[in-house]
Every structure is written in C-alpha cells, then in structure tokens.
Length: 165
Image 1 (tube, rainbow, N blue to C red):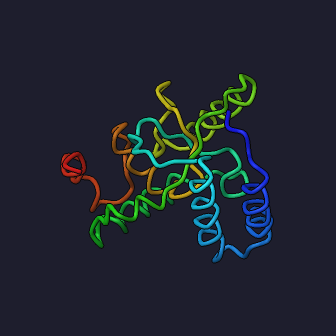
Image 2 (cartoon, helix red, strand yellow):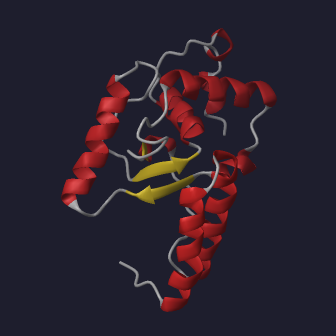
C-alpha cells in the first residue's frame, strides 16, 4: 500500500472535502481534479479494464448503485449517438478491497444488485475493480458481455457489433 506524503495530503485533502460538498453537476469535475492529483503523487494510474472485471462500488449513487433500466438507457444513448471511446477515459474505479471483510461486502452488495434485475450482469468471480464513475455505461457493456436481455428494441440486434470495439 502506498504511503501518502504530506504534500499529497495537503493537495488532495481539500479536494476530497470539496467533492463531499459539491453539487451533483460539479462532482465529476472535482473527481477529475482528485484523479490528476493522485496520479501526480504516484497514488493512482490508468488501466484498461475489461468489462467482465467490473463491479459497482456499494456507495455509488448514495448506495443505490444504479439500475438495470438506467444502464440500458445509457447504452441506447451511447449507441444511438455513436460510441466515443475517449469518453471511457472518464470512467473511474478502485481495486476491490484487500481487506477480506470489506471485499466480501463489496461482492455481496453486487450480488444483491444483480439479483434485483435480469438486465444487470451477474457477478462472475473474475471482477477486480469497483466503479465509481461511468457505472451505467460499464454496467451496460458488462450486461452485453453477459448476454443479458435489454428492454430497448434498438439494442436487441447490436451485440455482435459491440465486440468490434
């Protein structure tokens, strides 16, 4: 585990406070500032994570985690407007907790979440990260990967096309 320097704490601490008080419209902008600061201090880096390795952070959307309908609505919007892969760089996630109890909680909450709708991909045991940003887009693509049904007629024939990306 990385040690946080005093300089990093001085820079990142106020940003975290700002994020906790930010209006919803400003949260992404503030998160991106935190992400840049974490990277500058060697506390975070970028990775490409396959969709089947994604879970949703249990605190995402104030503990609601999202919705299957919302995920497919986002997928419909993405595909109707055209996929901009550069936007996926705005996705953010953390590794699953190394603490066994916290990790079990993260996985358990995702199993409950997936059981709430057949539109959501089930936990598959290969997951390594919990998403905190772009969870509806990631959830949609994971649902496609898991061959989940969709309520959007326009999406019902696109699955083979999605694997081109």
